[in-house]
Length: 577
Image (cartoon, rainbow, N blue to C red; front, side, top):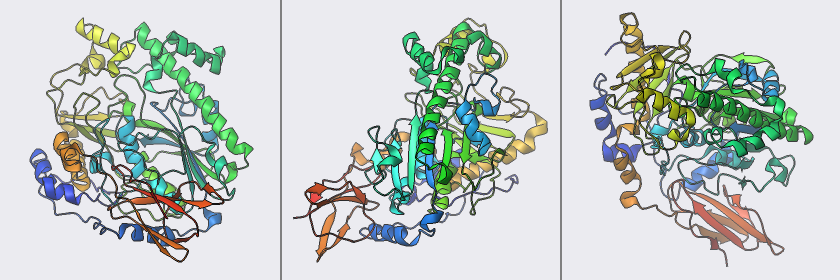
């Protein structure tokens, strides 16, 4: 094997013991990646015995928390959908984003922040767990997986450490959210304002959907409402924004209109982000709140969303933390949304689980920049594709495992975009050239290599250029090592993978918890490996909110409880007599 650059894996290997032993995952991967020798078995977390999971979780909640209450910041995430760094603070000449520009001036702006894939639910499965999706089998869009029992949604770990956790309102994790994750979930709440104790730290997520791909093509009536909200002076003219169109898209009236509407929607998103920031200011919380703004992947335009080119994975990421992060800072190091969970846990004083695969981006435990970030594309809706890739600060490598398929496979949801329809029409009429024509080539190249500094739209494939042979070999090998390290389940047919998780297609139900009373001391337990428990208490004729169970507690009245596990149905509710 050719020597490779030093590759630092920023987290230990995901515990996929059962899958590996049943499917022989290395035996499946290695014939495809024939240039690699068989690697030794990698260390994994040992499975927690049945009935000891909750004891271990209680120990985690009480012992792994190592920061005083005064050290813990409040945390606000403002996430949005389907945008690349098309903001004013990222030098987009057509952006009208005063609120996010102000946020960037008050904090840190990351210029090389990426998502591991180019589509929402797949990325969110990685963000909520801190794990690359192919490690846990969540790489196929619109699947319903069963994560390993050791894996928890990271807000549950914050909640166990005393945080009030809220989400407004999207989940879309490739598994159903459990009641153990959030104190408040949905749109019918007031975020941090619903804390009973104003001194309790909070982790709040506000997700803004107005810039989603579907809103670029939402129709004239709906877009008039967007313009009414942002003001006519903020409306982008399709002909004026055409100078920044992605080079691979044909410059047609429909494409220019889609590009203008994309910018209008971002302006509306910025307005909504500003409203959330103003609420934080009104409540006197801005100085002790870490704010993170990020997008769930790149632009919702053709060859952006769903793909692992920079147009589908390069995102805006802005972090503000008064008194801790220097204003007007620009970070050029590689960052990933997979880094967000360990970063939040570290800053909250919570021990980062060994299975997480990102690094801590800020604070005392900040990790080193990795030599590469890694990327994957798998099934998107009804269309199968298989790509893996790597990127350093400048170079992008992509491996196409199905080169016999055109990039331009038809996909119903994507093909509803007028720009995509024009692109197909012009291709059928043989009126495309250069990078615009590349999208329809058959077969695809087996490998792609791009110099993103000289070729930001990734149109000039250098993989066959002899002067880049050594770089190509290094990045190929690094990608293959990464696949081995994470146990890439994308090398396993999806049907086989899902049968392993859900034999016969059955979704298992978490076993109901048991309630043990010793005087007024109540202990709850569940026999389902990897389960979590929530409970309510009755006092003065009123049931409390659902609370996350981490240790025995005192209560002299009635108790309701239920158990849950990621990928399982919740148990039945049990009530003490």
